[in-house]
Figure 1: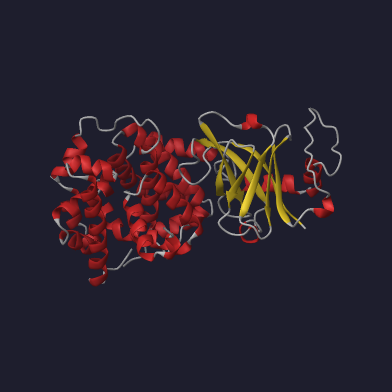
Figure 2: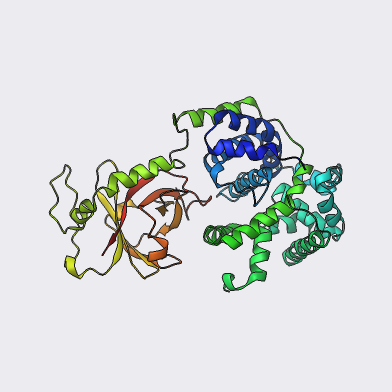
Length: 187
Length: 249
């Protein structure tokens, strides 16, 4: 596999190379904005959070360890974590009041998981997700894409909290076992 | 349950943290562990990598141009080394240098030496032990930058994992906000030591004896944070007080 250009851009960003950082932004912002939007469901919030996260990426680029994760994985984790923290701040306004986004995610039509099958680098994970029970798969997808907590998952899937927690836990364990057995390369 | 001794539980928590289902206080606690435990951090990174291919399924959305402009503005605001105040290690190091020039100032603050009359005069702090009787401790006096008034005394025995925080002015506590204490290393990000409760004197667990956890820490600082402490694990509010952390023995 060709070397990920983002690795070099992140390294240059750690040296405070503004041009490299601008390029890094150009190459990654749309994806990360998509990630943030899916979780917080409001453009103005997602814009503020994205801005914050890139300032953080700029100032913490030296903490990135190429051996540990791919640049996009590292940056997306910063964005997902920040968005999840944002959702749990006191008195959050209700996001997605009509539940449209949640419905779309639930119906899976056009579902993110179908999209996933098309991405070649995601083939192994897609295969392993396919191997899960439908409810386990759905719970994991809703948690990952939409940032739903256990109790939110229980509400949206109309199932008891304990049941949903078990789906997530077992689903993750099976996912790991499956990925390890297929010898999937981690990025 | 002892997390460190339970690898299965560690693995499960790492997975749920990476997925995003670990929430609330559990999430905050887990993040504190993460900072201290490289194996746990690696387990999380592995899970993030396992799940990362799902990102391919997220539709990219071009953010408006104002987002990049705002980022540039924020970076530009800090000039040649354009980093946020809290992000800037230079800022932290300066705090340390500025203050640590003088263990003498520390002794003044502690009342061992008569303070020069400043204006306004800081209340001298009287510690009722003779200087030759003080056990080996790590010691810090945190003052307000503008007035140089000492506000907190922090100390921990060399071989103790308990950090004692004495508040010199109870009025420093702000309703609905928390004061969080940070260890500021020579390089790298500040590490949270914990939230300072409203008691006049309280103990914070260091997780490791001071000789390990404080030896390489030139500066301690206090920031103003949302109630319960920083939600991100990094300082988010203004630095209110800071001071050198010195070895006294």
